[in-house]
Image 1 (spheres, each protein chain N blue to C red):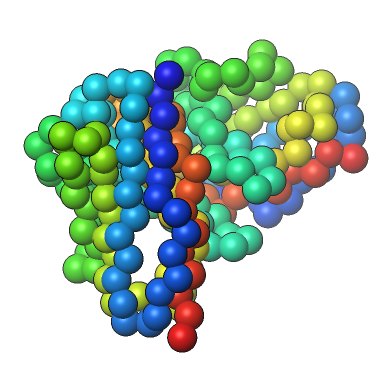
Image 2 (tube, chains in turn blue, red):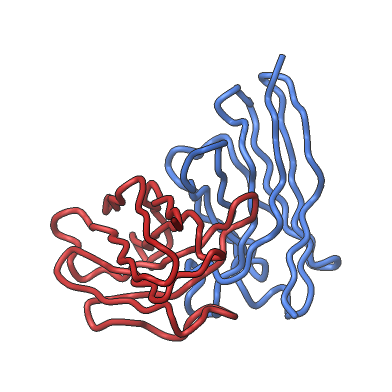
Length: 121
Length: 115
């Protein structure tokens, strides 16, 4: 079965960077886009961007352009999301999510368990 | 890009029915919307996609038949019949847009309370 397992919680200081991992199993990693979505406590979902694990191509939400980098290591079926210049407003749970089909990469059919990133001085 | 608007809260009694609404901004009446369920303390779960013709594709894994969708004009509806306690969740709608449908926008979510 499809599984996305994320790395553990992080605490970072303002101005630092954080890198969250998402290990995929149960399917061919390079066949489906990985998206990243975040959710601040008590708030709605916020889409950050996508990455094609085969080509490495990415697409980022305008809000995060210049501050987010999505990469992958195909040898270990793992996707990464790095967010830099952290500020308190970046405190949130970060999710990776896989497209429901190859053609519908932005329909988020499978989700990781979430990684809490806390930004605090 | 489209703006998706959802009422912040809704409630329904056990065994009753409820319809949740996601409204697209003007000019986006042909857009499809994806519904996601998020139970308390859990991650989101795909429910189904809806266009003006109704469901697009298949429901998400394990979504019961009690869940259905409709689309009309700028509105995309998620109806839950015979509401159960486990349906108490936040429901989010999302839509892809842009070149190649490569960007996603979400509504603010609706918190459904089962009375």
